[in-house]
Length: 419
Image (cartoon, rainbow, N blue to C red; front, side, top):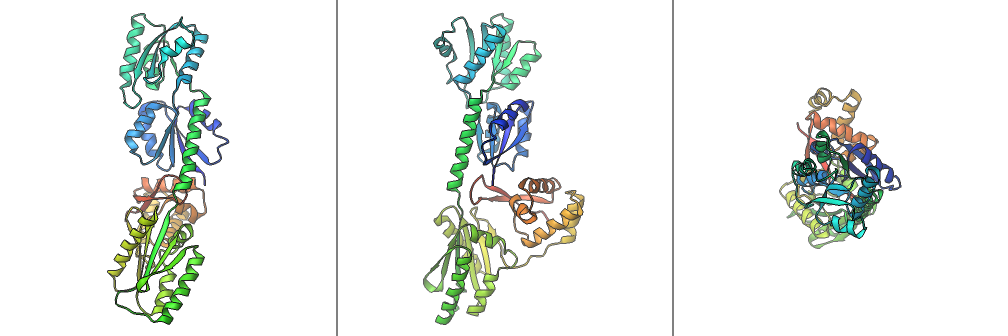
């Protein structure tokens, strides 16, 4: 599965990024094009399905950093000495300018760079800003405009789109920093490194604790038959079975065990099989986690909840310590009310509405992700995301949490019905 990368910038730069990223087979680049920095916040809202966001303008990256608060992985195309020097040389060659005002990060010592290149005929007025501090772009624009009105410069080279637009409107000769391909490729390489890192560090563990209800006893023959039953289940799900004290059993697995649970929200055959063997109510608590310790802790929480019931029951506690379940018990769903909402609020057609109702019934009205919809409908992830967006816009579903994916990417958003 490809990692979805939202690319932010003007049309020309985003097009360059997409061309340079063609040989990165693990990336699917989605364009978020804007003409003004004021549009960035709205674009970020629309990019919630992306695993990572790549910014071609540092100001837009700063806005995203303030807004997102680490919910998504952010990468930006960095400016370095090569970026500014290549733009200055291009500008001087094309327009014969010798007196230039420029806005530049403090860590790039532009005047020393010009001297090292023996371009002593150039006069550079540098407005130095701190990268990690958001500066009003009007302040930078006024600085350049003042120098131009005083006759101290012939033109401006700016790294900021809003400054460019302001000075252009004031009829100041202004030129925008051109990103070299090298810097874009460096950002793509960093993005690829983060994808590779996520692949190796995001495996989700599933731990299950299985027992009869407290106070109930079972014979040795029943224990043997139960062990055989659980061995078969562990082989089917590629899990590890560990017998424990007091006729408790521990299951530890990953992807296949997780998928088995997702496939049996409404009917959990393992409960019926075990109940038939031991002739007593049983508890099965599952815990999700990214470490063995957290997975076991969540399984213990789920198992404790099972003990509060007198009949056979199974719960799941996920990595966010949210309880899912009871699984294996059908929930009542008002399909008539849901169909009306799908048609009139989400504006789905009849076929999609019926399919979504089947999907909700199959999952027993448990929270779902866009990946779950894609798997159920056998459609692309993008098609599933379009359906999710319609459901959110129509106020049929709400964001219910996040799920850590099995292999890579940021946590996926989970949704649930509002009814």
